[in-house]
Amino acid sequence: MELKNRYEFMLLVEAENCNPNGDPDMGNLPRQDPDTGYGYITDAALKRRIRNYVMDAYGDKPGMDIFAKNGTSINREILDAFIRSDDEKKNGKNISPAEVFCQRYWDGRTFGGVLSTGKNAGQIRGTVQLAFAKSADPIDPQNITVTRMYYTEGNYNTLEEFDNADAKMSPDKKRTMGTKQFIPYGLYIVKGTVSANLARKNGFSEEDLGILFEALLQMYNNDASSSKTGMSVVSPLIIFKHVGVADQNNDPKQKEKEAMLGCCGAHKLFDLLHVSKKEDVDTPRAYSDYETVLDISNVPAGVEVGIKDNPFDKVTWGADAVKNLNLDDIAIK
Image (cartoon, rainbow, N blue to C red; front, side):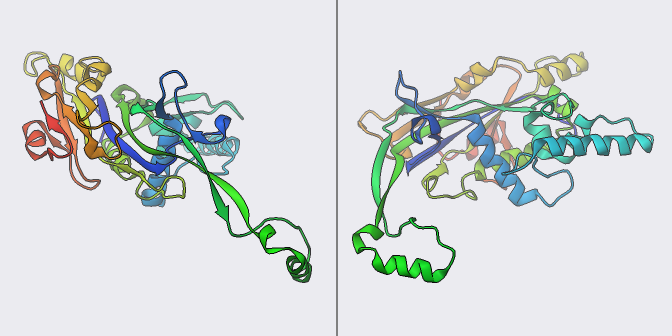
């Protein structure tokens, strides 16, 4: 089903004794604004987790492949889109390589892509855009040394050579040191927007949107690694749906236009969520150390609020969303 509404969405992600997003320019320390001390997670890191989930959950279904996979040659995929486009034209269908790309790849029609690195198929503007997730408070990146109970020295051609070298090596040489980069705790605010206008151009559907919302809530559950154990989504997914302010009976086209393009600036919606440390907390170490308030009373006209608490639940809207909200997660103002 065609997408007819613009959306904004938000959720909270916590990082506990892990590395939410390492910075290769800083020895893989968690990314941090050097001036303010606040931490951040790049949009690329968030999209990677979303892509991984969609690939695991839906990758075997038609139109749900992921092009940005580990080790993929993008130029090869672009050429493949040209070949498929030519084949379609032979069958009387005028479809561009970019359209072929969007039909085949979920992340193509969702996040877009630059298709000019090989044969020039142009660019796809992403239907969904994610901002850098920013921490609610400054973070404390740490680099600790750990003991590694094995060694990596030696490069021999036979097992006998390895065994002989091992027999001659003193026990203290068989242990080495490694490092781990982490933060004790950080609470990050994830923000994103969905363009109905670009959705129409890319073929991004209501079904694709539902999968996106599911993936946002699941993105750290199925992508565990040593550095990411401790990452979890701790809040419901908060969704703002633009429905328009015009009278449907008197001016349906204007209402449809408002719903597609949006009734207010995204910042007005993102500012409705207030996250702050509780008064008696000096050093936060858990989500429960924060007070999170959603200011329902100031939602702009023409916008509905929805809540998705669990990955496979339907979104609840309006009064039902507020009624069903777990106040231990988010309070209502």
